[in-house]
Picture 1: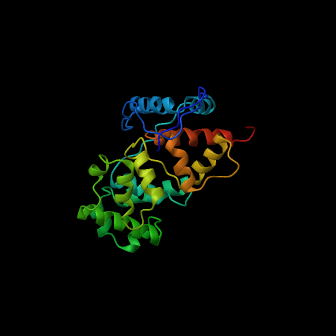
Picture 2: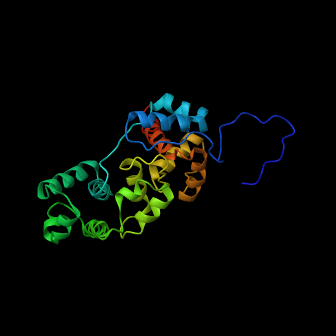
Picture 3: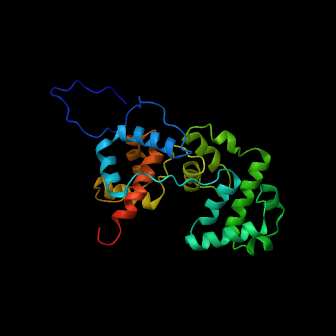
Length: 236
């Protein structure tokens, strides 16, 4: 960012926009205490907006899921189906595979996986993930030490893992404080409503918007989703 010109008069106090973050490091979100610390880092970046959203929806929810193969598989299974359907498929997988490991999934034939409710594309994705884990191309422990962008690149290199899947895994399984799922339609619409935009931002536009909340964009996403759930409710 080029250096700003010296203002001729004091600048108005506005919510911070994009710029280098100079505050304390934002912790990985693994519990309510680390979420609270990450929330305070976000609030320091955009106090007026964050306070307004939290006043309506309450503090950001933790919503963590098990990391590793099981957590990523749950995200894949849950795509493009209802919550009830996802739970039913997950229950059948748990019953069929008491130890849901990459090796056990790779050993299963199509009929076994279809009987659990998996579609052909999801079977291909889960097998690709299992092979990547087995070969070492997908190392969940290493992902936990990477910045959001680098981890995103590693995950999307696996067949069937798109940007949304990668971001949701980083956000809710690894607790990455800066994961920012720009392709999520609900998050796009939440940003439109919260910021008073005329139209819903696309992924590229939401990426730019999110710069104002870096390096705690994952907390901003939690808050925006929670606020959107309240704001779109009947009577609001």
